Length: 192
Image 1: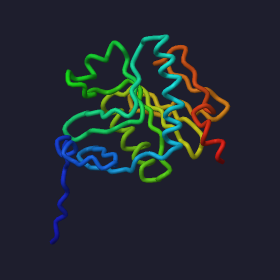
Image 2 (image 1 turned 30 degrees about the horizontal axis):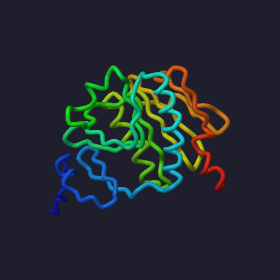
Image 3 (image 1 turned 180 degrees about the vertical axis):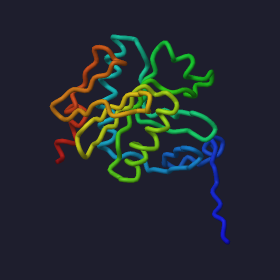
Image 4 (image 1 turned 135 degrees about the vertical axis):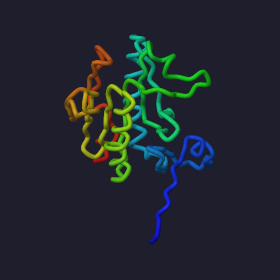
């Protein structure tokens, strides 16, 4: 009888990997590898970050960080596209040496066109975020030109609303903030 051996990776294993341009994620000890994001992904990231930076400069209720590493435990380390940490939780969420070691308040994931990566972001990472207390998760779907907003409840991060081009994305975590969905996809829409 054959036995299948599976290796459970740790954050120490992840940190020992070479700097090779790939993005490594660790979920439940399983190692995932993805390539660097494509141009439309990065343009959408910029189109979200800009308005968030401006809003938080005028309303210093939190800090927005692009593409940080988040260490949830020995077997869970991911790199969301964007996170927001409230000002009141910043000290508890960031270690003295600058590692993000607690759940951000808001996580934004921009889906890659690759179905496997999209499934990982929609399912595995969303479950991980819910298990660690992320209050809200936006899934930015570049193919559907849509933002899905998930909010934490007793049963995890559940879909609260879907916003399409022509609508605005808002959040109770960001009172007074509003972002037109069309602005997120400004450059990718023009290529369709």
